[in-house]
Structures are given as C-alpha cells and as structure tokens.
Length: 514
Image (cartoon, rainbow, N blue to C red):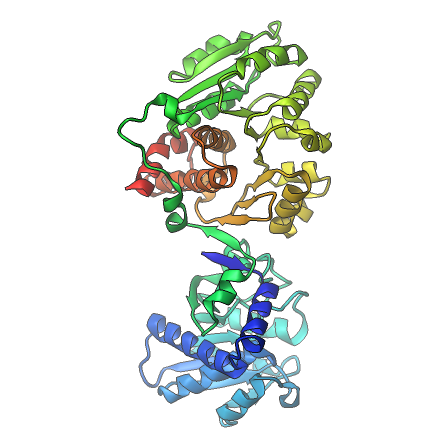
C-alpha cells in the first residue's frame, strides 16, 4: 500500500483537476459518497439514526456538507455545526453548503458556541469530523481545539474525514490536540499520518476510497510503501529442489564482549533461522568457549583478545583474512565501546567491500565519526538505529528525530549513501536513492533487550542470500515484526523475549511463502 504526505495529496488533487479536467466538485461529491458508504457499512443505515457533522471552512468541511446532505437523503436526522462564519466559506465547499440548506445548520465561529450543542453530540449515533484536513501544519488552538475536545468527550463513535483533525498528515504528529477517530475514511491513497504513530493511534480503522483520481496520477506521485503481508509476500523467493547450503550465502558476524555474549549468539542464531547457508561468528577468543555453547549451527572464529574480553585494532588483519569467501558482514552486536574496539569498527566500516549491516555498538562507534561512512568501500551499508542511536549519528536530539522520523531517516540515508532502518513503532526504512517504506508489523512486546540483535541476524542472512539491500531491509523488518506478532498471539506481549522471536522466524517465513 502506498502512503503519501498531505502536500503530495494536494498536488495529486491539482493535477487531477487541472490536467485531467475532473471538476473539484465531482471529487468532493465522490468523497462524500465514499464516506457515507463507509459509515453505513460500519454503523448501519437505518432511517432515523442521528448524525452530527462538525465542519470547518475548507474542503474538508465541504466533504462534511456532502456527507450531511447524503445522510439526510437516506433518512438520517443530521445536525451540522460549522466552526466558521458563513461568509468565510468559499471554493467548492460553498455550493455544497448551499445545497445542504440552512434547516439543520448552526454556525459556531466563536469559543463557547459549540458548547451549547453538547446534548446533540452526546446523543448522536455517529459524529463526523470534517473540521480540518490534510493541509494542517500548525498547532490547533482556540475554537478548533474546543471543537475537537467536545467531539472526543461526547463518548460517541467518531468518523474522521480524510485525516483526524489535529493530526499532521505527513508525520502523524499531534498538533496540539487531535480527534480520536473510530473510523477514518481517506481518499485515493492513505497518508503517512495514518500509519505513523501517534497518528495511527488516533486514526482507528482506516478505509481508503476511490473518488475518481486517475491511476496514472497516483502512480506517479512520490510516496512510501506500507509493508504488510501482501506487500512482502511477493518479495520472498521460494527454494528450489536442487538448492544447497552454498546457494544461500555465508554470513560473517563480528560481535561480542564480556557480559554481552548473548547479543552475539542471538545475531548468529537468527541468521541461521533466517535461511543463511553458513554463518561464522567472530568473537574475542576468551569468550569462544561460551559462544560454542550458545551456538550450535554457527561456526565460531576466535579472535586474539589477550583475555581482555573485547576486540581491538590487532584483530583487523584476522578479520580481513576471514572475509575471503563470505557473502555479507554484520558488525556490532555486543561489541562494547572500548577505544580499541571503536577504532577497529571504524576501520572495518571504511575497508569492508562486502554488503554490511551495522548495529548496536557498531553504530555507536561510528556516531563519533559519521564521516567514515563517506569513505566506505561496501556496495551497501545498512544501519539499524533506534531513535537514540539515530540522534547520535545525526548530531541532533532524540526529540528532533521523533518529531519527524521520515525526514530524519531519509536525509541521513541520502547524505551518507546508506540504508537506514529507523527502529520503533512503525519502523522507517530509507534507501539512498529516496525510496522509503514504513513497516506495519510488530507490537509493544518487542520492547525488550536483544530484539535488535535478532534483526541484525535476519538482515545479514538476507544479504548473504543475494537479496538487494532495499528488499532485504523490507523483508527483514517485516518478518522480524511478523514473528513477534506470532509470539504475541500465542503467549501475549508481556514477557516476550528476543529468543522467542528468533525461534518463530522459520514459521513467519513459511506463512509468507505458502
């Protein structure tokens, strides 16, 4: 599913009207028809039901006027409250206001005026939020904030038109306050704000309806791919009857330090569970016996560490020699941040010429010298930061990252020519060429240690199997969350462990390939 920003949707509307000759009034009529069909499908269409439409002065309000008229024609009792003065309503909204008539319309442009109609709101079978549309970019204040509060407090089902009022359609950010919708009916394409948190939480059930915009326009518009099972299923390759372990690549994972052997083991074991033909785990020699117990199918390479329990500069030559015949590399899980380890990581990032996944302490090592990414020899480097790591890499605050996750990931990916997987609720994937995706799988049970190590193992395994980097990112992130969703369905979210997810990876793959 493609998702776009509000600005992109405005350009889609402009092209549809100006280049393809579709009247704006027809688009508005079709939007109202789609909304009414969705309302009656979810809440019933029996004559005598009561609806309240809270409308603004723009096109979103115009959609609301169409909805009010069509519901009235179907026998609903409809009250329409306009949070504007009549003379301020123009454009395509104006003729639809006139068609509605004035019998059940109240204009409430000043604070306190809508409050006189609280009983109507509380007695409605459905409240239609047609207050603010996708063009909103500043915080909601005054009479609009009051209207949103009254809709939320009414305790009745709310249907948002296009986007819940108060949600930034580009980021999902709550602009001061926002409507909590039970159903959102949007037009032509879903918006980023519908699927990115916190907007996703305010959207409720999302319904996308066709309003007559030509497919050539929506297909040409820039957007992000929303990853669900239908999107990922075609990306996964099935195995042939003559395939063997050499067909699926050899992963090389540099990981581990004293107290963090679990991270190294989970990355290696997850690579095995994700279909890699062979996996070699390179670890400090003093920790080798521990990793030999924690890993069975993966091979281990014991790197000299002087019994210190961490890797350093002297290990680079051993690693360079071991890369012969490998297909993809992962660096970072559980490495720790000793100065010698940091220098080793930076040299590896600069020198490795194989596809590379950089995670955890690998990211933190690079954060102090992000320019090393510009000196890389690898044809594809995948970074997997959580918001704190992203902030350190980009030299900004976590708040800056979280305020616009899409932009943060996209700008870093393009500037450093890397693939960025910005983890979190609705993980963002950004490619250096501008392609982007938003992950739809996963759940709060994943908020526990080791989940990132599992993802690293999945990604390096997919790269080793020959998937192109952007495809590997999309498959890897979705399967990671999908496996966690399977665990949650079986065990619940509380107490979910990374190893639980690791062990469900083959089952997640099977669901998507059968």
